[in-house]
Amino acid sequence: MPEGPELHLASLYVNRMCEGLVFSGAVQKSEVNKNQEVPFCCDAYRVSAVSRGKEVRLTLTPIKTDEETDNKRAARGAKNLVQNNQEPMDIVFRFGMSGFFRLGPESELHKHAHLRFYTREEPRRVLSFVDVRRFGSWEPNGTWQADRGPCIMFEYQSFRNNVLSHLEDKAFDRPICEVLLNQKYFNGIGNYLRAEILYRLNIPPFVEARSVLEGLRSQSEEDDEDKKELNSKPARKTERDISPPDLLTLCNTVPLEVVKMGGKGYDPQKEDYSEFKAWLQCYYVDGMKSIRDHNKRTMWFKGDPGPMAPKDPKTPKVKAKATKRVKKEDHDYTDTDKAAKKKRTKSSSTKESKVKAESSTKAVKVERRVPRRASASKPSRSIQKEEEAEDHHAKENAKPKGRRKSSTSARRTSSVVVKRGRGSQNGREEAKTPQSDKTRTRRRNSSTTAEPQRRSGRASRGSVRQSN
Image (cartoon, rainbow, N blue to C red):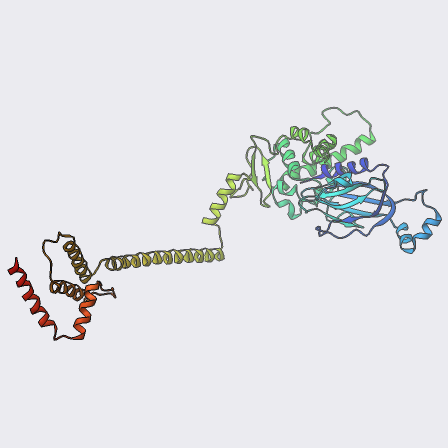
């Protein structure tokens, strides 16, 4: 997150890159951004910037150019005349988590450029406010926020007096690491600055802020008396007279160290953070500890965190996050979460029981169907007898004809086959042969003629034997 030094570097970047450039036209806002439109349109204007704590103010100043003649101005109409009479406008920016300024060709416009200022030259260039996460904001015709204190870098004495004169405020009952992020008193201090300042003074982050700053008030009063004496009797300062830096002093000197590194810690064209990383002594440095404070902000430190540390501190590491989620699911949930979890468990168990019941029913159905299929596949007794008779008849026909059979014996055989075929079940078709059809027809026509035929058949059979 950009802090006081980064916003000051952003203002220096705008002044350096926009020096001598003339901007023209309307200020354009991206369609996706929800901040307000900037009602500014001018044929020619310049851009300058200044910072204060965690805010940057852009000033748009209309200018007159020699290229414009009175005839051209008259031809534009009343609307453009109003634009030429545009008053200067201040736009106050707050960078949020990822805001920065960038100047580049129009063809290389950043996809997250949410506010754009176009130059008058050809090809045009664009000064854009880029904000990837869209937490930043701007305020047309805005001023410095009233609830922000003096700047820690360029209003040091006002900043120091503002802190020491409000130590009775309830805000100073909190840990010193959390008070350092209160912009009402420490305008410009952010996450990495508080870690570096407390580390250099070896102050535990979770001690009461008032106990840390209380001694500085009496010290400042002694310094004021010493200054009065020095003014009345000029004397040369020695090393003994120079007091060691305190917390409020480092709140001024440490950010200025970052500013002295120049654009290397900010310039969006280079994005070289190697020098800044080498400057860090505590923030994200190997061997340091980190826990989340009461505002869920990560605090980096060394040694004992202090008596006001969270009772259940959470670290920002990935493994710790997973552990936190498991603990929350097991213990730290409300009555509503309990009811929802119970409902989910009940529904899941109901689904499992339904699935088990369906699977068991299917298994039973399968077991019941198996014997039916098996019984249906077996032939009935009548069919077996019929097949045996047919096989027997085929064997008889296949035997060598030693003697000639009478027609009566053939009729008997065919009638037996027909009788067995009539006893078949399950709608099976009866075995039919030409001889059985003739036999049926004869029996249907006359049942009385069957006996003499059998007698004649016996007689003929006996005659055959006699002849043999």
